[in-house]
Image (cartoon, rainbow, N blue to C red; front, top):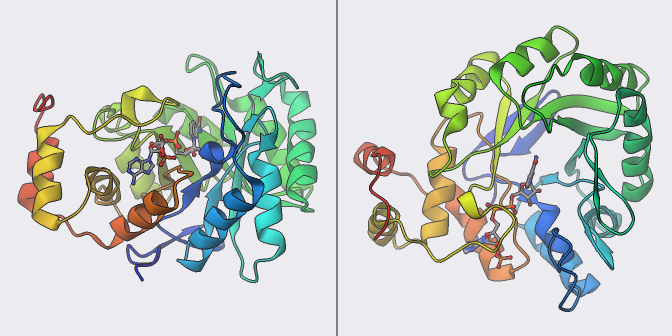
Length: 300
Ligand SMILES: NC(=O)c1ccc[n+]([C@@H]2O[C@H](COP(=O)([O-])OP(=O)(O)OC[C@H]3O[C@@H](n4cnc5c(N)ncnc54)[C@H](OP(=O)(O)O)[C@@H]3O)[C@@H](O)[C@H]2O)c1
């Protein structure tokens, strides 16, 4: 069985994780955009997905208190899954944005409200401290100093072990690092979404020894919508050569951007989970990477 360790490991501060992890946003069923139609995911099935991930070596889970559908929450499911799991799993959560109980998005929390958000995650996850908390920025034009300073105080107080940033630019990373160590940066990134390459952030993280953790690496520009059938001819070509699926090639491409890049694909489908973890074992040739990097070749 292919394992999440096939692509190697990385350290989030003092916490070592396998480079292929799992994003829990998709575990709640019904979607995140208020579309509460359809049946909620079966709790047992959701927990089994996580156990199946852990059995294959996934020990890095991304979650948030604001990942919930009307009858399920990602944190509740992660908590349940970890209750009967023997090994250490690093749980990364994020604060800043929030949703009211009906699911409506709230404005970015003020710095003095971040403690409440951290405590909400602690309660939901059933923990006394959080492994890693990302400050998820909404407005790229603003300074992160006050918010990150508030999180640094919670780190000093022992509620949080390590801090990260999400949805940021290089200047935010510089600002935050003046305040406290940053162990990871989580940005939207994939073959179709290369802003973090254009700004130099992916390489900067590598230079600084900080994990770069792409989200939407599979769903791309469709974001929270279900991933569409692959339309990129280059991805199909490389997939055929490896007997792999297009989704695996997309994940493998992100992992080839550097040893500091971690994957957190989200899925509620056990077969997709197995595929995603197996993608860590794929080794793409230089010519394949060059082909995938060619501009404007999409649209097969
Ligand atoms: N920091 C942030 O602001 C932020 C924002 C969004 C997400 N995130 C985190 O990042 C994680 C990843 O993002 P994401 O879940 O939105 O998007 P993603 O991983 O890019 O893609 C998930 C979509 O792809 C499908 N999929 C997964 N594996 C597949 C496979 N092997 N073959 C075909 N389709 C596959 C999933 O559907 P199936 O369920 O059918 O497999 C789902 O529709 C999230 O779970 C969340 O933890 C962070």
